[in-house]
Image (cartoon, rainbow, N blue to C red; front, side):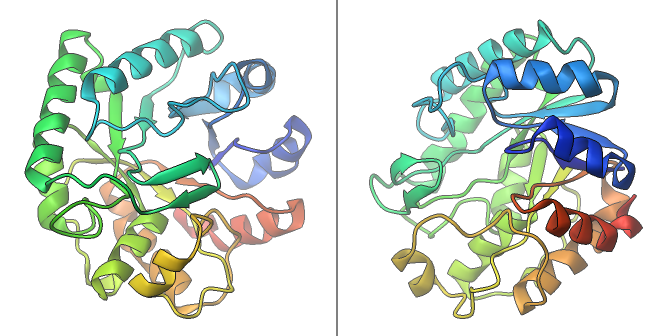
Length: 278
């Protein structure tokens, strides 16, 4: 099943591409805008993601961060689900970010710096989060997006299979391949080396990296703002790896969602390429 995220797209744009996909993921955005989208496509909205019911242009809890604040994250998840349920009564999975740790001014202005914590503390906080969600009867409805940020032992938690396996002991996984490619770059390994065996992957996020990225290394990432992914497909080495990983994982999960911020023609071109994933 191939979905497309509604984030940053108008109803008209979504109507133009609806024949290319099996449904939609209701993505990050203001509540009133997403109410309109659900009014048009409600029956075809399969999953929801992070904060699709924001009430201001920028919410300070935008990314959430269970590795730092599990209780606050759980509260935000509960509030978001309650808001969405008022205008979207039927959905299958709610995916939320594992968190970004660093200096952030806005959704597209982030540098991996700032307070670093241990991997052990991160996993302990994810465990606390899962316990809270279980008490709220929400754990079976959610998935945690692979973590994307800095810690003491390694540049990014969730960037290898051992760490993902530790996370999966507590909560199901939403595997973002664009994020994973960035995390792999910090370790100087190729995405195609990852097998993701035995992970409870409930959904895949498929996002491609911008074509200007040539020097895909930790040094490059540290020098640039978080403006790497959600691009249309372009023929680069890392994007080919992302596409191959999606093909390999197709049988592991029913839901693959492309996150893309691009022109209508670029969206159509990328979705045409991805028809084999339906």
